[in-house]
Image (tube, rainbow over all chains, first blue to last red):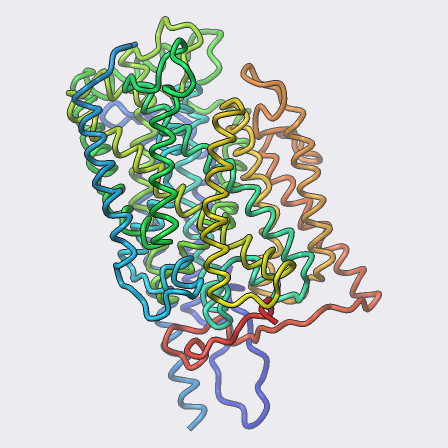
Amino acid sequence: MSSDLEVPEPLPGPPPAPLPAVTPERVLAGLSLTVPVVAMLWVASYTKADPEAGGVPFFYWYQLLWVPVSAVFTTAAYLLVNRDEKARKAARAGGKR
Amino acid sequence: MNNGVNVTALAVFVLFFLLVTVMGFMASRWRKADNALHLDEWGLGGRSFGTWVTWFLLGGDLYTAYTFVAVPAAVYATGAAGFFAVPYTIIAYPLVFLFLPRLWSVSRVHGYVTPADFVRGRYGSKALSLVVALTGILATMPYIALQLVGIQAVLDVLGVGGGAGSNWFVKDLPLFIAFGVLAAYTYSSGLRAPALIAFVKDALIYIVIIVAVIYIPMRLGGYGHIFDTAAQKFSTPKSPGSLILAENKQWTYATLALGSALALFMYPHSVTGVLASKSRNTVRRNMAIMPAYSLMLGLLALLGFMAIAAGVGSGVKGFNAQLSVPQLFENMFPDWFTGVAFAAIGIGALVPAAIMSIAAANLFTRNVYKEFIRPDATAADETRVAKLASLLVKVGALAFVLTMDKQAAINLQLLGGLWILQTFVSIVGGLFTRWFHHWALFAGWAAGMVYGTYQAYGIASPATKHFGGSAANIPVIGEIGYIGLTAFVLNLAVAVVLTLVLRALKAPVGTDETDPDDYGAEAGDPKTQNAPVPAAAH
């Protein structure tokens, strides 16, 4: 999932010092985005009626619960990617100097 | 069923309708731009929308009136299987988080208005761009028609849709008026109209859903009782559904969720909403806050069970499940609030219908008219043609609903999802790599379209002989799954194999006008400030 970003081709002239394509931020962001997808596609993990919550079978409340949980993961990915992009920008600016 | 006209509800409904009509016309003055004649202004709201406007716009765009009627209707009719809309919208945002920012950036740098513009620029192929554009228009038309079906459902329950006895003119007059007004303000205000009206639509929807999921269970004896009643209904031997997903339905459930999630942002109207935002970060931030709508959708789906518990449609022979939620509202709410709820659904149809017609018009103008008919068209010409095309698209949708049967619109919309998914490899593949050969992508698209349509043709349901569903046997795996996703895998396989062949033959690959840096450009970068005229313009 971290193949999200294409590696830029090396520019002619003195090479700036770009960050590697794989950074901890990108890996973590990729993982954060993978978790909700895997959880929802693993249907067998939630096709059951018990335990109920307030009269609502597990099948329904579990999936509804994943809506806010997925938002937390996506927000985490957003923050991580933002951090990564800032670091890249700084590295580029530094490289050009 | 109530056969009289619900006067109070109707009055509230009309009041809200008048309010949004005024807003629609005023919208042309909202954030008015210097160069009103450029297609970016009419067709993308000047590419100026910030996080919140985009959030309302996308919410108004993706969660349509038809969704509000059809999702609970599916739950009402089939139980757990209809709930797939929830995992679908949960996985959609993490998935698109990966590629939408890249699409935004490259479109901003090169001034692309439609996904087909991007395909044209990336692969330098007129043929591939044309099929992407036509697939988009084809998938959007029945979707617009279904918005009308949503309005019709509400009007029917209000008692102004006319019974079987009234003549066609009286029966369809309210629909004519609603659509005439919609066409007029979309024509004059462009994307700004639905963007502004979306605030009202979404606010109304949130209010109605929150009230519904608290108030209705109170009147029906709590969620426990609701689910018990539903369980009883689904436990009869002849019941087509089940309260908890049966084991042999799990593949269908997962593949429908995944396939629909992949297709969601291939729809031209979704892309329009994304490209109208003002920065790359606006797009990303929205992927994190869009789930608020998914939560609402999930709660809405539960209304299907409430309709069962409230006895809606029980004992009525051939009851139309599409009416279950409107009917539930009318049975449960005081009249004035029924009016509010119906206004929410009605306006919920107008917003996406406007955006869809704009998106289809943009596609026609940029990728058919300018590309093939008048390559020297100026920006002002484009805007004029797009405005006219938006009218034509709506007239077409109206004619469709009035002349063909409703089932045809539903069938075609199911097919539309399958079709639009076949543009995924060209668009998303192109956002990450130039490896694919454009003729291989073309062949993959064709294979997916033919296979998917053929498979869907063979499915019968009680309501229709062909195109009666979207799941069939997956070859090799041997489980029942979403045809669109199977077709997508076939599409991808054909594209990969043929690319290998064409590369071995050293076939010409066409020109790529994009640069790897374009895909990461943010608003304010020098790249986005002097966007060149796209290739299609030369």
